[in-house]
Length: 415
Image (cartoon, rainbow, N blue to C red; front, side):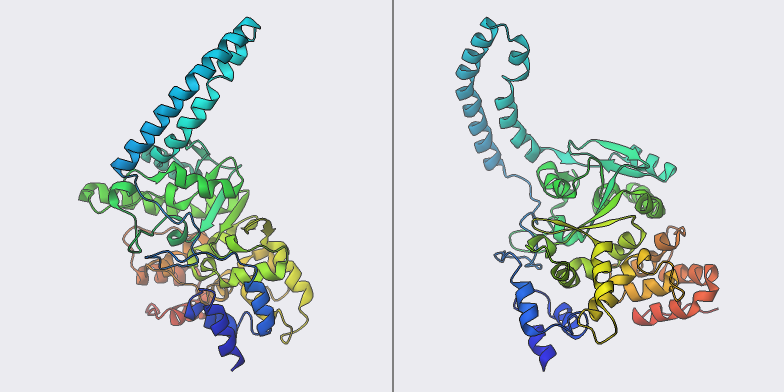
């Protein structure tokens, strides 16, 4: 009865029924109704948007092209603004020249006009990885990163990774429906205006983003183009272990966490478990391989290792209030069990960390393990072929591979 009340309370904050049920019965089972209500009240309320499958999605969960009429109106506004600024700039230029401040004329006078047009340029410019640089990153087993200006560089260190759920951050939300944005927009990449909304949150000069670094197979491509892009995607997947382990940090961008105003690691841990980020398989691999994982909230940042350490110090036994949170969070980080005599294997940790995490693509339920184990995936492999490779490489881990298959309703490969 208490779990049902907790579930209903969580659902009332626009969190999915399945997720709420799991949290009430497991992660938050030691919390009272009042505890949960206090934590949820720390979330900034957001208006529901028509057509959104994810009502908790952040306000930047949009990615739409600018209609012609809006573009014409904005251009008229910009030209009028530039014309209005011109007399003031000319007057200021004459005064500066008379005073001998020639460098100021060159550097300072164009700034207002540059800022005015820069705003619109962000709306028109798209960020898309050049295919030759994608190939270079695969050959070098390095990260194809992008900076704030939308420029790309293949880097082996000195970069951050954005860990996210595509449906939340990539604007897969139109006015009347939910799903990938129009192909005419996807073909150009991600609008810079949209890109900056998540780039600036990551606080890094260079950023690796999977949806940018991994080219998309588009429906209107020729079969030859689709084959080429599919080959590149497999190449990027086989580089992920190197990319994740060499990054300075992995930054978690989760829509629910971004609404949280709290300095308490308890609140951060609870909301993290309620968010979409904890429901995806690929985000587990990203966190597990990272040197450092940073959780971004509305007005702060938290180191995941420190959050787990806090709960670890607080928990004495399985009756403790935070025990459910500890069980859910510790498999995310290898450091959580380093040095312990009972430290689980990578596949055991993957099984426990992958509970209640899923993927929309069936083959990814196996492929996600390959970067984690530093194995190479072959293009065209099926689920069964991937599982056979795991069994061949890790014969001593058969129990955990079997449990992985059973949990995900996959057929264990015949010997």
